[in-house]
Amino acid sequence: MDESEARASYAHGACEAPLLGMTVGAAFDGTARRRADGLALAVPYQNIHWSYGELKQRVDGVAAGLVGLGLESGERVGIVAPNCAEWVVAQFATAKAGLVLVNVNPAYRLPELNYALNAAGCSALITAPNFKTSDYIGMLNTLMPKYWNDPERTGMAIDETRWIASGDIAVMDEAGYFQIVGRIKDMLIRGGENIFPREIEEFLYSHPGIEEAEVFGVPDPKYGEEVCAWIKLKPGASATAEEIRGFCEGRIAHFKVPRYIKFVDDFPMTVTGKVQKYVMREAMAEELGAAAAKRR
Image 1 (cartoon, helix red, strand yellow):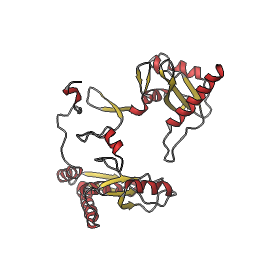
Image 2 (spheres, one colour):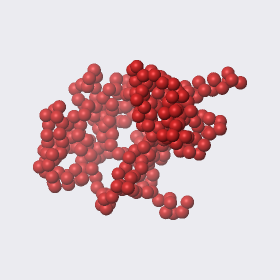
Image 3 (cartoon, one colour):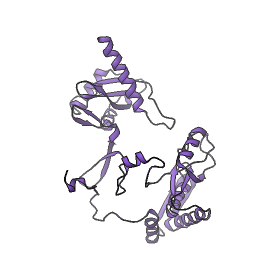
Image 4 (cartoon, helix red, strand yellow):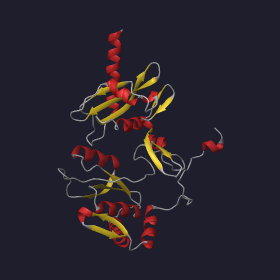
C-alpha cells in the first residue's frame, strides 16, 4: 500500500463546497443569522412552528442554564424523551455549551436505564415526565471523541485524524447522492463474493407473500459461508423454500439466492425491538450441524 492509499478518504456529492471546519453550535448560529425568519422546526402534535430566530432564543437560554449548573466542557448530559421540540432544543443547547449529549431509549425500564446512566457517566439529566407506560430519566449521544471508558473500541472505530468508522456501507451514485446498503459486520463472504444481506432482504420484500425477511450467513465447509434467510409470511400466505428460491433465480445473482430458508412466526428481538441476527445465526448453525451429524 503506497502513501496515497494509506490516507483517509473523503468523498462528497456534486457540490464543490469543502468540508466545513466548524462546530455544530457555530453552524447553527450562522444559519440562524442568515434565516432568522425562516421556518426551523415544525412539530404539529405540539402545535409548534418556530423560526430560526425563535429556536435560537430557546437554544441559547437552555445552553446558558446548563453552564449555570456548573457543567464544564466535555461533561455528559443525558436525555430520555420521545420526539419533541424540547429534544431538538436540548441537542443544540448541549452542543453550544460544549457538552456531550447521550441518548437513552425512552422505552428502557429501570435496570436498563441504570446501566446506561452508569456506563455513560452523566453529570446531569434532561427528562420528559413520561413516555407511554414508562416514567423515566435518560440521555442523548452526539459524535464523540472516544467511546466512554472503552479504549479498545475507540482504537477500532476512531483513527488518529478523528475520522469515525461507523460500520455502514454506502454507495454514491452519479448525482452525488449516498445510499446506505448495509453494515460491515453483517456482510458475509461466500466463495470470495461479498454479499450484503440488506440487499437480499429488500428483494425478498417484493414477494407478495413475505411480510418480513432476515438474511445472514452460516458456516459452510466449501464456500466459507452460505446465505440463509428466515422468513415471516403474511397472514394467510403460504410458500415453500423451493418456491422462494425459484422467485429469486434469474432476478438476483445466483450466489445471493438463499441456500437455507426457514419460515418463522417471529424473530428474536432485543428489549428495544432490534432483531438479533447473531441469535438466529447461532441457532441455524446448531440446527445445520445437528442435521449433518445425523447424515453421518
